[in-house]
Structure formats: structure tokens, C-alpha cells
Length: 441
Image (cartoon, rainbow, N blue to C red; front, side, top):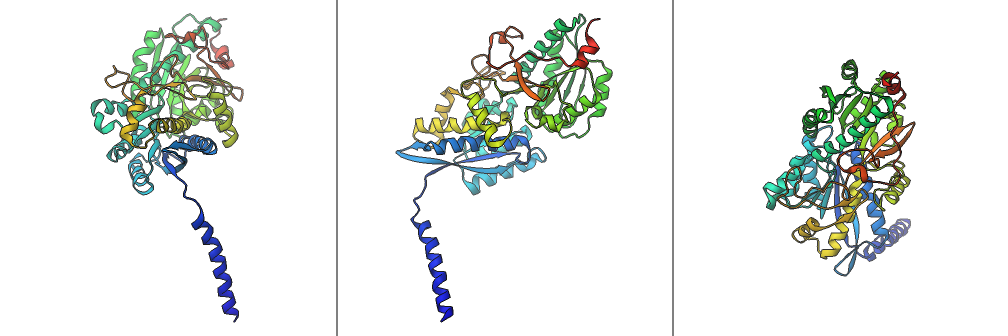
């Protein structure tokens, strides 16, 4: 008898659990795969940016499609592309074939994005690139449009525009050093860049362009993007007595470099690309030794590039307790897809692609417009347009524990960017070590 009543009790419990599940209404969803190096800050920002957009869109009712409200569903995929780029293709294959997303976005390291791109194109899946700069990725859209038309850039603009912006920041810092310190000789610049494909063009262009700015290149150094010790490189750099060190780092070496340069107290201004220095935790990671490091960036606390920037920055920091880096532009990518899906009333890539190509989308980082087919290099089809009124990026500097926007500075700079006036930009600070070393006596 006890056994009978126990079976009855268990049956009632099971029925009470099953019936509500059966009665629950089916939710229509749009699936978006987010793929990136999830063990690193770049992948973490990929995921966080998309999560923030998903939460906002779903809370507001979702995506209007064919008379229904669709919710955004995200699928996380770790590409492991920083540690092992060869794993990226299989990660993309699993994401597309097992999880079956409607769209994919993310990608960071060029060596990993190249094979991921091939997989996505095999399945004719729209892939929103939110991290890899290399122009060769977009150039495939030019050379084989029918196969690669599904590939679009969201961030950053390509490496040629990155280095152009780098030079504008370098020119600004150089002008400030000369004016404030009374330096009359040509400024000496040490070039240091991680040994990766995307940085090759940066180094080549730097060697050719820096002399045109009236400066001298003292040498080029190429450490690993994951180096945990760059003392040898820094010692050699210091021996050339540079006024400025011009870095190009996307990987974790950026922390190593900032920390050890500070420990060695090298009296040189540091300005360039240090992706890790975009991170709120950079100050702590370098033990405060990364003070005065200036990097190309996308966001800074208090700097309003568009009217979407500050609300996004505040919401991101509140939800995740950190600053967004440029790979968090998956936030914009999700909203772009929402906009174009609602415009087309379709999820069909063949219908969406022409609309994406023609769209003008005000993002958190500027106005996103795409270069058309047949654009003159360095522009490229499906790459984001660069320049004032479009996307420019900003320059940020660590100033005594706070990350401040310092470029573009109205009236100071080069190449027509002197007229840009983003609210929240503050003056660049010269480090005391540089002042002590080079100020005219």
C-alpha cells in the first residue's frame, strides 16, 4: 500500500512538472552565434556587447518580423584563436552545424578569422566581423563577391586606416612635445609591434611614413603577442634614446609592455595601439606602471562620439563592471541586424545583404556606412567608411588611474581631423620622466 501511494505521489509531481512545460507558448527566436576568444578580454567583450543588446531588445519587445515578435537568442562559441588559431574553423563549424544560428558575429585574430570566414561562407551565413582589422579579409568581397558577400565589418576599420589614425595621434603628441618642451631636433621614434599578420602592414607603413612627419625611426622590434617578458626589447629601445615609443599590440603583451616600461622608467612618450590599455583593469594589471600610455580606442568615459555612446558606456559598465573595448561593438552589430531584418521582414541573407550594403547606421562609435564594390584601396567593399562624420576612433590616455579621451583634440592634429570636437576630450599629459629628460634647460 505504501508503495502504491508513493507511486501516486511521484506521478502527481511529474504531471505537475510536465503539463506547464507542455502548455508554455512557443517563443519565436532569432539565433545569433557570438564567436571569439572567450578566455580573453576580446572575446569577453564580444559576448558582453551582444548580451547587453539582446537584453535591451528583448525587454523592449524583441524584433518585429512578419507580424510576430521575435526574441534574440545568443549562442556562445569559444574560437580559442589567440592561443591556437587552427581551432577557430572547427569552432565555427560546430557553431553553424550544431547550434544553427541565423547569423554569426565576432572574430578577433586575423589568423583565426580567415578560416572562420571560409566556413561561414561555405554555409552562406552572414558573418559580422567585430575585431579583425586586416584588409585582406574584406578584399575577398572584391575579388569573389558571390562567395564572400556574406562577410561584413563592424569594427575596427582596416589596418591602413588604423595606422593613418595612429599617425594623426603621433603627430599630435609630437607637436605637443615640441611646443611644451622646446625640442628643436627631429623627434626619435621607436617602433614596436607584435609579430602577427595584421601588424605587418602597420610596421611597413610606419617605417615609410614616420620620416615624412619629420621624425626619425630608431628601430623596429617584434615581440610575440603573448610575450610575458619584453625587457630585452625595452632595453634595446631605451638604448636608442627615443622621444616616443610607437606600439602596435592587440594581445596580452600590451600589459607586459606597459608594466615593464613603467618599471624601467623609460623617459619616452608611449602612443599607438595597445588594446589591453582599453581595459578598465589595465591600471591594476600594470600596477599603475601603465600611467601616461596612450592608445587608439573606441570608447572613453565621458566622451560622446554620438548620442548613443554615453548611454551604452554607462549601461555596459553597470552590467559588467568594466569599460567596453572595441570588440564590444557586437552591441551595434545586433542592433544593425534588428534594423535590417525589420526593414526587410526577412531572415534570408540574399534579401538582407543589399540592404546592409546601403544602410547608414548611427552606432556607439560613429556613423557606419559601407564602401561599395570597386572602391579604391585602401577602401574595400563591406568595410566601414573612415573619416570625420563617419568613424574615426578616439585616442585615450591613462592619467593617474583614469582613462581619458585626449584625441582628436580640436585645433591640434593632422589630416583634417583638427575640426572634430567630441564632447569630453581633455588635454594630453606629458609624463614627468619625459619632461625631466627632454625639456630645454
